[in-house]
Length: 438
Ligand code: ATP
Image (cartoon, rainbow, N blue to C red; front, side, top):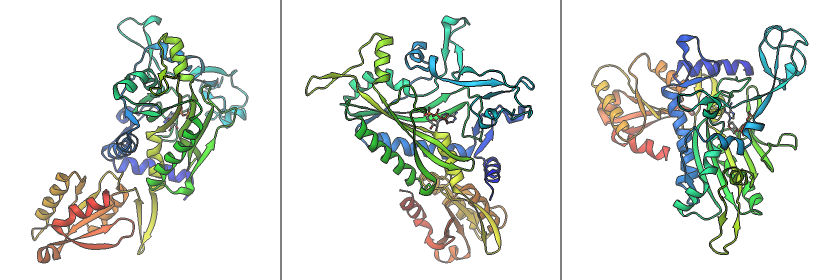
């Protein structure tokens, strides 16, 4: 399958099955903004819950936080975003479209839109932060920004969290939330958008211990992605060279996936040194030092950050899971999502609409839902069509109530990937599924 085809197919499947819709579609859509539908929102929540569980619930050295999107404007001066969070921008003097100057076509001198050659203006720097106003007066003293990353909310709360949670360095703070960047060239579906979600963890360590922690976090994060069932050969690290390093970073590695449009970052692991806390000390005039309770030593911790784009992980999962197969001469599309993140865990089918099968199916569906196993009852169409719909939606198991159910109380459970079918007692289906989901 050609790579461009795969992206088209993903966009179309995502819409058809209720994963992702274009924002404000009835008005013709909003540029590069997407809405998550009934299945998309489940996939997203599952990814976030799994991340939160591994970071916050399963460890005692990381605390959670949910800081506000709007922050004091000085935060963004301290962080360096007012000064440095810019992309070079050129405009085509023929069609007046604007592009990032570092796009390969633009560097080649040709306008990607109208094709005119050598008609670009000089590059100028464009700040990617969305600016708005707090309160009713629209003047510069009321200007605030929509946060372009969630990390700063963590830094300004460093001592609040450390003190109230009685944590000792080394420890971390984790947060999931929206971030906004006025990207000049958004695109590739949900890969680069102007509104997106980040799952970030900032780990505070003693200077000198930062490199060992950096290595540990690299391993931990890569393992997390592999555990999601992403094909290992499609994952790799990319180390930032000196010209790629952000102004705050001593060392940075991207976790990359081989998307249909090439190897691209979907998580960044950064050694931010003491840059952020030092700058916030300087700009706020408040001390942000940590006092070691054992030695009474005072220091500004170094920070190792893991910053994952939730939407990008979703694109990784969808692209990695998409398969087209031939099953006994019949084509099928499958989303082979890991059961832990699949939106619907089981579909329930009454084979025919008689002999009490619909009632039994409803009862089973209700008991699965009562056990918090998201399930879906489908009584419409041939059994083959019902399987195809669930295969496309990524549902790992389909449970069929059939003629034998009335005789011995068992149902058939069919596995999405192996297509194997097993018979399980109706009252054991919840346990059977729970065992496989834990
Ligand atoms: P890129 O080079 O692709 O613009 P970045 O290096 O600026 O990304 P970071 O600032 O390190 O990204 O942000 C951490 C993570 O946030 C990224 O790995 C990515 O998953 C996500 N992210 C950043 N910008 C966007 C965006 N415009 N749309 C969706 N996700 C994004």
